[in-house]
Length: 83
Image (cartoon, rainbow, N blue to C red):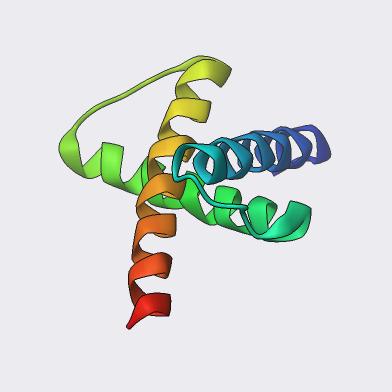
């Protein structure tokens, strides 16, 4: 992975984490926490879409996959936090 790809991954992860925090009606985890949630969500979303046989291309597709993964991750984190 070159530097450009890493920067794009981090920006998509940050956007996905921030959006997921807004959609889930939470305050989020701050900029660094949102970035972590978004980046992990990007991997989770990419894996999940791959398992389901769905493909989305481009930056918008990557953002959608990362957002779905981040939403799932936030849901699970909040379930664990409550319990």
